[in-house]
Length: 164
Image (cartoon, rainbow, N blue to C red):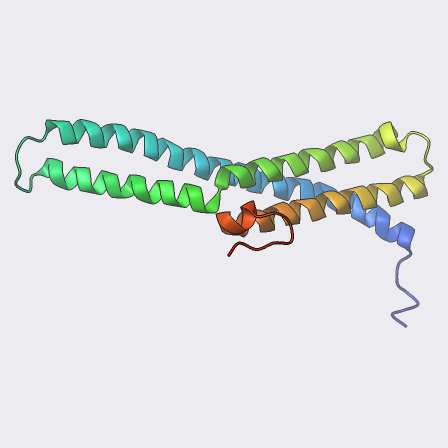
């Protein structure tokens, strides 16, 4: 019974076309989130580095003063922010998500307006092409995401080779 009510490929492609807007929104939201995190951490690094240097230069005694404690706390926060920024690569994640969202949105607009690659295609062929292109873009995004999740040595190695 379920097999006989399975929607046709054309119907599934139409549904897919409607779902693409949600994918674009999700990528854009994630991109903004990572950009905000990156900018916040970078700001902490800049302000903290400046504050640490200033406070350290004000300290002339060797005993535990508020300047020493503050210098240690700020240095720790800066190191932590720099570590998170380098490890999680928020800026790169933001950039790739935004790039993918923009490419998918460009395809959706071209399909809706019947321009570019979709100019001479009937609706069925246009939806088929659109689905293929968007899936390709999403696959590319997943590969880039996986590459960012790899340690730097593995990510820098040529394709198919793992770092020793």
